[in-house]
Length: 530
Image 1 (tube, one colour):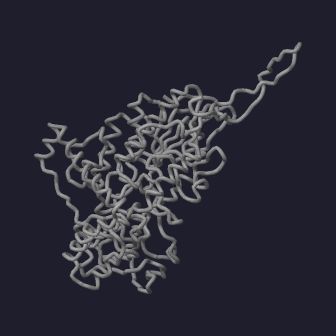
Image 2 (cartoon, helix red, strand yellow):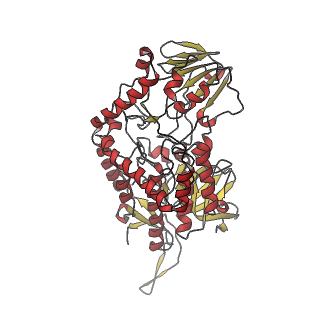
Image 3 (cartoon, one colour):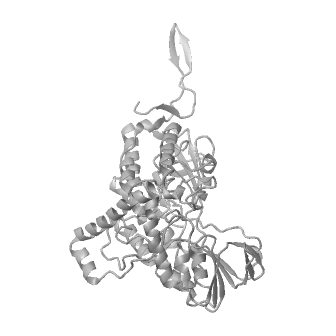
């Protein structure tokens, strides 16, 4: 387990681990399981909250559920034959992650209520100095698994600070606040909002939905998984694997339409329009809710209850974003004014500007945020130039538009495992630093493929794009392609850093030389494989 060594400050002992994992959602717990499977037990998982679970712990809003089928939204190495529904709710997914932590005996490695405040690369000792709210430690390797859906994004609305009512974000739901009979403003129409609206519509006095851009909403083929099915999956595990394989295969076949032939998605739009027409009979409301961009450009949402809720008499749809708050009155960009008692923001997360990037300081003294000022980019979605022995899970261009992120996470865990194996093979104190040219080549290739995808050509402005309009979020290919690209670490894409040896001061003695063994220097770069 963790070792103790003398720290630089006043000779105190400082904890050192081989690997520090940041976050305990799917990425962090998956990394912990993979480390144990690789025989590595000298690691910690640093979690800022009081429980594991990541986004599935934080998002406890009414109606919260996954839009990926349950048997595909779970680890391949930890199948769950007992999922209660084809699309599971938040409580079931959170419970699954808690069981993963217990089943694989991860609890001794997990440190709850331990938020990382800074990580700095020590070029002299080839390790990361990590500061947390509960003290400091060092690590040879850092695996950042904070995830892109961890820090809520709330727009800066003039007057919001003086609003006398209740304000909260969907990812920080206030369960103590009673919505019954209240006048509520719901801001946003993303994946969270379309699940929240049908639930709170039943209890609020009046609900006003502020919609900047209408989403495409498809029917949700959700149902309870029968007792017979669950019994079969428990008795014959291969049936669970087969079910997962079929779900995966269907989505792999769909990728071509998103990445190469967006025009083929027109048929899907017709299904979505029929889904709307069944519930929305008012032509004016239907016009407000009909998107003008190609389906798939923004995330396709699944719901059977969203449109029926919007058709209820206590719901108003304002086809404009919220622009100002004046006392109890909320004002839309089109001038619409509404008096409300509560404002709920369903406005997403800091995806292309993750706050953790401002806490990571690399070998040049720059933060990851500064390094990524012109856009996120990482080699194979994992490692960034200037940040040796640091990698991220669900990094740049690893997101998916139609399948399960668990597939991408497991591919990145393969890459992480081989990265650590390569360090073992190199031996001694060593680090791997992604070559800037390798990062550039990889990123250029990804962005070239991105040009013809629906996310770039569909005519929308989505959260997939950064402030420069570059898609730094989504993977423009199949999960099979990504798994092949991350199966092994290519050492030619890295520089090997070695701990500097003391420089030798030479003196001449009778024509010969002798060394004093004094001197210092920064880390030495050698060609990979040297």
